[in-house]
Image (cartoon, rainbow, N blue to C red; front, side):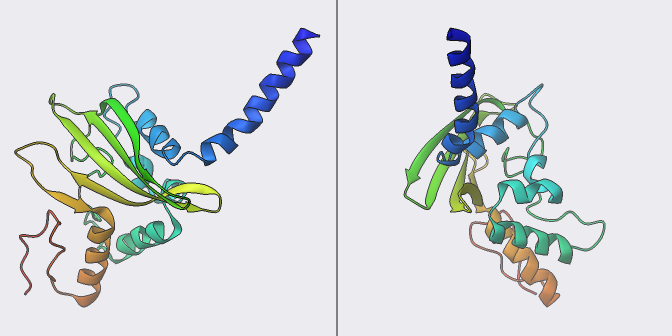
Length: 187
């Protein structure tokens, strides 16, 4: 009798876990950092930057914008954002990730993921989350390096929108103020 009860309980828990995870806006971010910190921690944010997998993690509008940015980027050029937004770097290394919910309401949330990289300094990446189709999806990624040497911050969504506009207009336009590309001049 106990074996049947345990089997029933295990089945109920397995079936309920996706439902419980669907209600946790941090669950996708925890899953992403579990992937990128596996092994030696150098896999990076390719989890979301590859077109095949980005639709799993990103909101429809964010994924569509990223697809559009890829489409207008000339062959052979790297599509923005030009760095890995998940690891806040161009040389990924994630150690000791910590994920917390900073704000949450019924349809949006802000999640902060902090981790150590190659150095001992802490890096924090913030995720704007939206609820779509019953699941939490990333709607923007904000990076502000906590390093004193790298005092910049940016929005991945703004970087992608900037690239789409710049490529369509055929000229450099003034990038968003919080862009690492802010030194570019309008020509």
